Amino acid sequence: EAQVTQNPRYLITVTGKKLTVTCSQNMNHEYMSWYRQDPGLGLRQIYYSMNVEVTDKGDVPEGYKVSRKEKRNFPLILESPSPNQTSLYFCVSVGSYNEQFFGPGTRLTVL
Amino acid sequence: GQSLEQPSEVTAVEGAIVQINCTYQTSGFYGLSWYQQHDGGAPTFLSYNGLDGLEETGRFSSFLSRSDSYGYLLLQELQMKDSASYFCAVRANKFYFGSGTKLNVKP
Image (cartoon, rainbow over all chains, first blue to last red; front, side, top):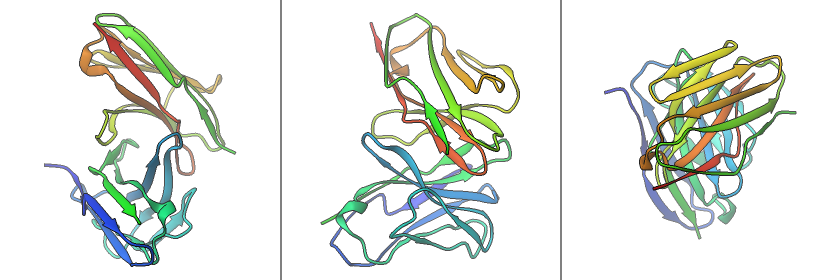
């Protein structure tokens, strides 16, 4: 089954404790990205990657890092999480007709 | 800069037809797509328009006019399960999403 997986699905952590949200897709897509979704602010792109070893900033990259060492994986790293990074995060894989396939989401709370 | 405008909320009755509009301002436009998101779920892809005109997929249709920087999503024979948020998204140099339209379908 074609899918995008994310882990963990839910995470409660404390300020400053480094964390990684993993993302993997099995559709051999080149383009992947990360969004955060907040009430009243919609979906905002954090980072995107158009191919292996190529990453670019989206609209809200501050406080986040990504890496794309292989085509299927695109982890999101928060080196020092802060409460304003409490959000719902989606990993996305983009198909050849520009359709975006969303992962199930990771609900992060930073205390 | 980039901007997308869509209504914040729409209400319709079961069996009716509803149209959700999206106007955009962007440079380097490639196409317009639509997504559905139920409460607590992830957005799911509905349609993509790269060229002007109407694309039909079952009860859902999507339209694009590049010259007017405008598109819409048309939902026919509304069902209760269509109650959700609907987002338009532009593919330019990267992707941009509208703020979403909450559709309430009433019996």
